[in-house]
Image (cartoon, rainbow, N blue to C red):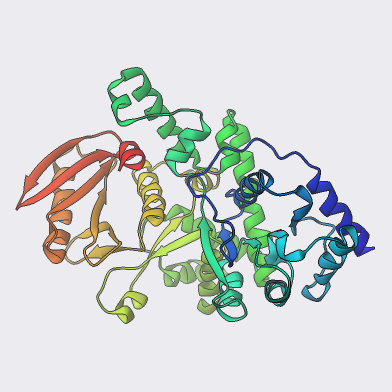
Length: 428
């Protein structure tokens, strides 16, 4: 019965016409001789990255040489030891095919317990053309670091960047276009939409705000119940939900598990601090949240520092809170953007706090985020924070990212550029 099901899945997909695909900025390599692994938050577009790759492959090879299986399919309740049936099914369908020339693409493979041994065997005995995706960095990274070590290259997939969001909205813009007032107004309006509703690909096509809200709430519930509660066996669902809601409400702020513990204790919930730490760790593993360490030259001090918490997409904040602080939404959005650009990012704090320092080499880039700097006190506070970080790192240039304010000053030998986030995201 399993063979018949897999044969149906294989042939149906091979004969299926793929939907139109808008190219993302990342292009997956083929013929690397490695297992190409895509990890990221649910609904961020991992499947469409595979479709994009399949479309390219279909230009040069026969469709019968491509096998795609999505393990989110409710019919596939199998374990790792049963995955060999896929190969048996394919060989029965195409007995004359040489498997070394066949491309296997497995979507959400972390749903199958013990999948890594099958992938290793397939890689070592049959073909080097393997692509896998998953929605849990912990599960995949652990297995990649052991069973698949040295055999894979990994890519992290996030919701749309603002540049990609404009592409999904069918708006092309070049640096000279910002002097076209009508086009500039369109970009700024789209940025306001992106700031509130985020960059999940499906959401970019939805016009009705009520429908957006319902879709994003559904995303959150699936992440909560399937990715966290079921996968990590958390039994106290109200506690998990409460912690995540508090995380959303405190986005971009230092996140204290001890404070959450005391709040729950006062409300009559019995839960250990270890459990709360486990929930936060799991939420980060499934890409729902990201924690940002305070910069220190000491690795130990960094790991022990009070971390700031960010949500992977602004839409999840809007859909699950009465959050109205656009400054924090702007900071959360900037964190996501910088995550794509730098090898490492931290926040910096001595007497004052600087929002982000991004490392691609030894000397970091320095960023402060402020919704507006029109107020004199705000401008002074932001520039003083930046200057303290610049003195520490001996940096002569830094950025204040705003909603719409723009200026350039030089102070204490440091050039400070205030740039609207939308312009920075697209052109820097």
